[in-house]
Amino acid sequence: MNLENKKLKTYSEIDALPLFNYSKVSENNDLRYLLVLSDYFELPEISEKEYKELFEVWERINDEVIDFNGVNAEYKAILRMQKSIALLKVEMIITGDKSIENIIKLKEIELLNMYPKQKATIEENIIVLEIQLKMQIDSKVCTVKKYYSYIKYLTKNKAA
Image 1: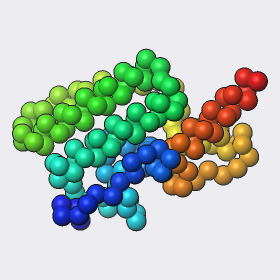
Image 2 (image 1 turned 90 degrees about the vertical axis):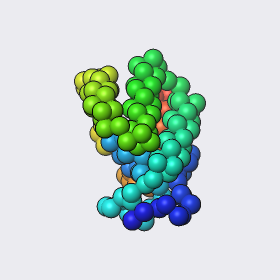
Image 3 (image 1 turned 60 degrees about the horizontal axis):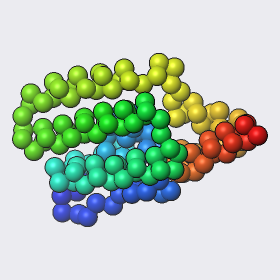
């Protein structure tokens, strides 16, 4: 499946982006999960232009998450590294220079080392939220904004 001649339909804001898609982009650096598709078993090939467009969408989504939650210095560093990796991938696509792939691999290892060692996955966080809120959360339906709203709610009520 190639999208070259079609207009990209993307999730472009956190109150529409399902948590499932957000976690796939965050964990796998695969921007194709920003596409609105009927299923995600077979992701389409995308062009250099489409990749750039998806990268811009991802930057706007990250800005929204930061605006909504605020962000600490560690998370800012992680976002900067993710951006650096994505830009290198674009450069590799544009120039065809395969040597950039080694730099990308090194930066991806560096990125993995930036994450806290005991960091809970989104799925683990969902389990905690479900227990605390006594409700089911479907990551394919729950939006990123709703997910962070639940966390804010629990954090605020725990402090009260």
